Image 1 (cartoon, one colour):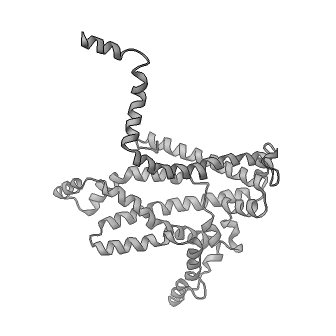
Image 2: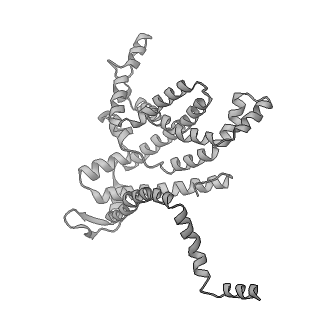
Image 3: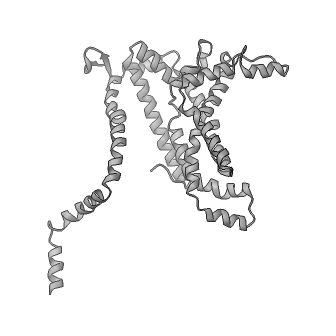
Length: 322
């Protein structure tokens, strides 16, 4: 009878259901409150710098007046989007952005993977630490500094590269004023600046691979390259797929620092990208509505690309971002 009474009391609606839904969350919050507190800075960062600024996208549909403010300015409808398509150099900027991003993806994306595989095979600890430090160093340097280094190394008169070319009996190459060589230098300098830092993620992924797999492979007679191909690469493949999706989602976006640091008036036909146009027209000339429209279209295309890449990864049997 006691068991029956207890079960009957638990089945009464309104008494046990509310604590059952709120109880587990409260217990989880009390148990791991310190971990949830660690999420607060990241949450505030994205809230302040990513989500709240989305309200400024309304400028793309307004004839923005600095003195009236965003919401008091007159509506302009789709005028700025029409102006965007009528910009004389618009399609050239899109082409340059896609070209530089595709080259950076084809050359720059595999670079940290190869570096991480090589560093993972290094057995001398001191050499490994020194190599990692030297590879990470460019990431912490401003592109103004890196651009100055690139210009000095490739200088036709004093640069070490042209000194070596002249020493070998070749003519010097004006790397930074030749359009083909400028694109080549841009791509390789981007790899130099980012590849070392990117190895951290892949090295961290390699530490999660079960070492017993390598021991079993040695017993089976597998060599170093066979272990890399059959164990290491499949072990880091989920990380590779996620980072590839994120990189594809930025195909029509490009940072402003590197193009500005390396560009010059001679190569603007290949160096003028969407971000530099937004800076020169939006910030310098005050065309906020037009450049906001350009940035909005850019973000929408990036969203479509990342959704498509994630869907394609799942169709191929890989884990996507979500």
